[in-house]
Image (cartoon, rainbow, N blue to C red; front, side, top):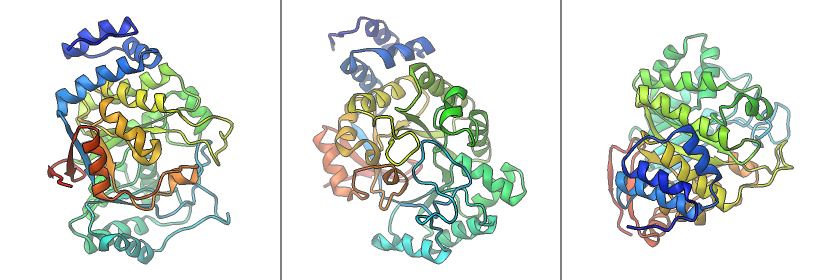
Length: 366
């Protein structure tokens, strides 16, 4: 199939992509800076269809954010607050278990759990949360605690990270979400999250997660003070770790939402950057099985369009997401399965319902 590239630089990249050659750092920068967005999307779609054909995955999941109290103060975050703040909350275990039942009696495939770094909660709270959910909902996969949280929990437990992960895994933890990566570049992290786990530590947590037999996801926060070189470096560092561990399942680019943050002078991302972030990620992360469009962050419309820009996953039903909405997210907080499936079909793709690890998948008939 012949494509008329507006940017001649993309013609050379097409040859590499069709030959399944790995793209370089310089190639990544070209993709981020190219004025030919449709050309970049076309290249990403080559890889997407090579890997997955028309199949597009989604999951029946529920988000649980157990507390917004956090010892860190990240400039980009509108979710975390200090103790005593009028908006602060911390859920009891009984409240968490009740929350889990609210949506269809807990009949979902996955509980996705992340929260703040609470200064007073003991490690036992987290163990009891996981074991209590697993005991009540044995068939639901629990994906919980970002690398930042896990590092903090190891400190609470006064154990090594590996020992902490094994204990959580034994309690029922199934896999790890990809949050907390933000942008690996030191220059950027100093500006947006100087107190947070650094890039090397984030990567080491995921390396350890993979070494104990669990899978994880990875993310990148884009659209704030980073540049094309920072994004490319981020993707390559993830790719290098995946070469060594093969433990990442899915990559999720996360669009920055500035409202109610200390970076509220910045603009929200526009659709062209959202589509480009997904497309470039698919092209650079040749060893990642899946690239996900997180509809709750980039709008369902952009997520649907992205199915022709490299993505093969639309996330899921979600239910009661707090972190993005604290930063001004304007989407709803729940999609029913048939709505997601309809969007996928309308985009010319095949909806496939999956579990967290993509081990059980089946056609979804609307």
